[in-house]
Length: 100
Image (cartoon, rainbow, N blue to C red):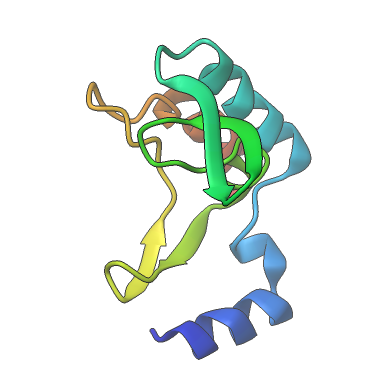
């Protein structure tokens, strides 16, 4: 799937790409308890709270189910990048199972 198709799919059905607000808040709560949570600078001079491993702000990545990775050139599932494993896994199971 290329970036343009991903964008068109997102515009047609954003619920396939975005979490609910409640799900995102639950993910952010996990982030706040993580040793890798801190300040990130996604663009120069814009400092926000977020993940110091991946550099994503807490206001963006926790809100997505999948995204287009420019690094990989494909759509990937959104997951916590912690070296001990995906710290969102249990939270995601609760919310994703509710919606299926």
